[in-house]
Amino acid sequence: MHTIKDVAKKANVSIATVSRIVNNQSGYSEETKRKVLSAIKELNYQPNALARGLINKRTHTIGVLLPHFINAFGMELLHGIEEKAHEEGLSVIICSTDSFGAKTMKYLQVLNEKRVDGVIIIGPELEEEYYDYVDKMAVPVVLLGTEKFDNRLPSVQVDNQAIAYSAVKHLIEKGHRKIGMIAFHEIGQSLRTDGYRKALKDNDIIFNPERIVFSSGFAFEDGVHFFRKLMLQAPDITAAYIISDEMAVGAITAADRLGIKVPHDVSIISHDNLRIAEMSIPKLTSVSLPLRRMGKTATEKVLEMIQTGKSSESSIMQHHIVERGSVCKLVKGR
Image: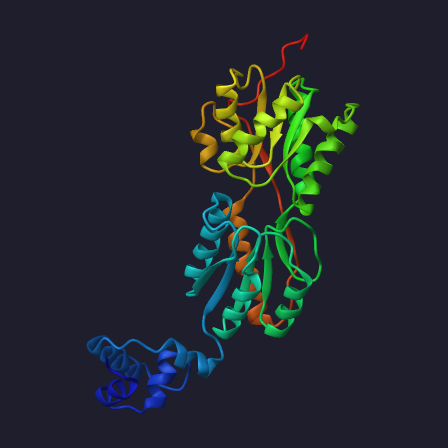
């Protein structure tokens, strides 16, 4: 491998001049720049990223902590992060923290050792020990897709209570009053159950706890299992709000096995509006979240904080309902 010394010798300039040109600094003529770039191309010289980082105190790398590594929701967020990072010439280190963030502290330490310029944390709210360590890292950290509002770190998120409210209200507007829900047992998910209950209350529908079941995950298999449980607990429901598209597809599969027709017997609305919503039969009516844009926005906040040295404002992204075939207007008399 050729070194910076080889480039300097071939271009007949100093090592310092080559370094300034490689790092886009000033102090050389256009002719000198042309000679150096020509030498770099001829020698196929690859600048050492670590060495450049020592000079400008940046590694041009951001770390991403991502739970549910293969979850489609997380992957959409990640696509947005990588798209913006690529535009800005940044590298991305992705760390899978397992389903419930079991490896979060370990990977925060790894990213700190790698001297990343910033960190994006996807998923549930942080434990207190994580906040303490983040403070010690002294790099920009942005939370992405967290369940609860938290002013200690800038975040990019959606209003989960408003999402649930919109979904249930949509079912009510279609004439449904016996509405079930498959929720998630995490504390932060109470925002969604709060939205469900508020929509019922605002429309004079009495809350029935038998119409909610709490899943242990967001996957297809969870949808199959917990839809069966929901129908055992509340066989009279005419509609259900399910908190992920993948679970909703599982619920449709379970309904078919039980001889329940979607949407004519039970309407289903979910949320995320991932590609799988278009693939199911019937296609899913889903609350659409701007996941890729959320990932890009989180990356933009990290860059803003790197450049200004100041914290960034949190952002709440908007949602909307995409109507497809899994919800129908209730026939009178049911």
